[in-house]
Each structure stands twice: as structure tokens, then as C-alpha cells.
Amino acid sequence: MISRYPKSMFFIAMLLIGFLMISGCSTEAGEETDPEDSESEPFKVAMVMSGPINDAGWNQSAHTGLMNAKEELGVEVAFSENVALPDFETALRTFGDQGYDLIIPHGFQLTDATLNVAADYPDQMFIIVNGSAVQEPNVGAFRFDSAQTGFVAGTLAGLLTDSKTVGIMVAEKAPNYQASMDGFEAAAKYVLPDVNVLKAYTDTSSDIQKGKEIALAMAEQGADIVACNANQVGLGSIEGAKEAGIHAIGFISDQSQVAPETVYISAIQNVSKLVYTIIEVGYNGGLKAEVKLNGVKEGVIGASPWHDHESEISQEVKDKLEEVLAKLSDGSLRDDGILPKPQY
Image (cartoon, rainbow, N blue to C red; front, side):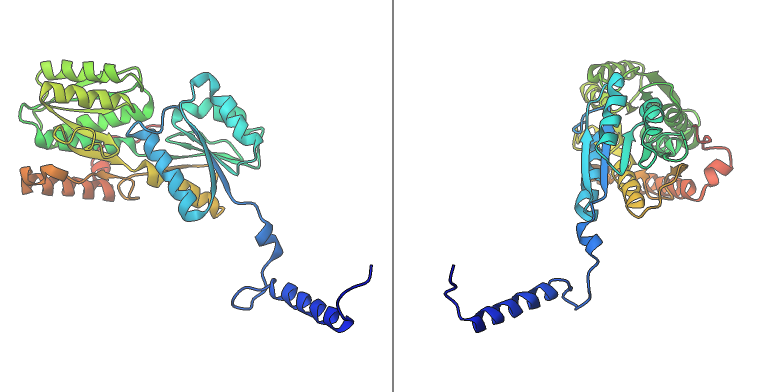
């Protein structure tokens, strides 16, 4: 086939193409880029959750942290929600087979499944949220100092009760739940020594009706403030408090939006921040097979704003809350034997 273009034009075109190819290997600053950087795979993170991402608490907050990491760090993310206990291993193994760099089992209840699965994926990290297991070379945990969370909630309950009877319900007698209950009781008695603390185990983290029934029963026993650390069950406890005409202390996330007139304030476990921190540390290559404890000092436990109740709360109550938070942060409450020791 005969070309329609003169040879001189062909030569100029070839020079132009060569120049463009050379220019494409530099940044705007004129520095050469590393070919491996442009072709490298993104850091991949997957999370397995036993509940839904719309529970207004534990799982929803974790999902928020995952999405924040996706947006701010540019990591690739995936998750499975509402995974039943018999399916924990399958869900974890699926993400392992798909080559995720970091797999986050969200909750201590996934511990056994994680230990069984992780051994088959030694080059991938498994970090259990609120876990306590360590298995070399690739299983560790980032956990909340749950006694501190309970202590914040119990402080609020003790400061705000009029009847001098308050209630706390938790999902089960597992270490993190028990620690939050113990912390709640210790705090309520710390700020109000003659307080009566009602306690209950829901034996479920998903039965909303159970939370409502327990809250109503506590109200009948004189409680005017209740708190619940049991995932979705907390929504039922708030509903029960609303029906009984008493108040609730939110737990884990800021739950004021669930029932603004019922929820005074919430004891916060910033799950989204903890999950984001896990991913950020992993992204930077700093994860190890170890347990990392996090609390007020690390900025992941605290109290929500008072929202519409701000004007109803005395300055004395606000000051006492700030004092307690400061003592949780500096460790003095635990040093003095007032805050229960962490349970693993």
C-alpha cells in the first residue's frame, strides 16, 4: 500500500510520538514516576459483621469508619453484614481467598472463626475489633476499654437520676459486656453512693422487643434512667424508656436521634474512629499480632453533646462529667481502684 504522506511528514510525526512518550513518564514537577507505583494494587480491606449496618450503633459505626477510610485513604473496601455464627468462617475465608490485605472481624464473637481461618492466610492481617486473641504471625486485636464506656454511662445515670434507681442491660456475660456493666455500676455509686443499680442480661444482640420489655420492667422497679449495651437491643430499650416516660442514656453511638426527648446524652465508643485507625495503621504497614487497648486517652471513648437538653443540665453536672473524663484519661480512677480493671 502506497502512503499518501511525504516521508518528511512521517519523520516529524515519529519524532512527536517519541517526545510524547518520554513526557508521559514524568510528573508535573518533572520527576520520573516509579512504574511499579502506577501499576500497584490498592490496599484492600474487608470487614465481617454479625449485625446490620443500620443498627444505629455498633455495626453502623463500623461501616462508617470503613467508608471514611475508603474516601480518605483510597483503600478498596468490602463487607459482609448480618453474618450468622455458623457462617463466620465462610465469610472470612471468602475474603481471604479474594486476597484482601486486611480482614477485620467486627466483634469478639468472631474470634474462634478468625483463629481457625487466619492460619491459612499467613500473608494477610486479621485484626479483631474488641477481641483479645493474638496468634502469630497475623492475628491481633484493637479493643475498647469497655469498663470506661460503662463508667461514662454510669456517671451520667448517677448524676441525672431523680429516683436514685437506674438500670443497665448488656447482651451477655462475655468480658467486654461484663466490663461495661461493672463500669456502669461503679460509676453510678461513685457519683451517688446510695444509688440502686438494676442489672439484666438480654441474651441477645438483635431482639429489639427484648430490650423494650426489660426497660419497661426496670421502670416498674423505679428506674428513671436506663442504658443498654447490646447492639440492636438498645433501640428497644430506648423505645421502652419512651413508653414508660423515663430517660435513656445512649450507648456506643450518639443515639439522640432515635428518640430526642428520651435520650439525654450518650456514652460514646467511637467505633468508626477505631476502625479507621486500624485501617490507617494497616495501610502504613504497622499492624502486629498484639492487643491494643483504647479509651478516653486515645479519643475513642467519651460523651456525646447534650443536644436539646443542654439548657436543662446544671453546670455542676457538666463539670462533674468533665472531671470524670479527665480522670479516666489520666488513669487515676483505675489507679485508685474505682474503675474496674480491663477484662480480656
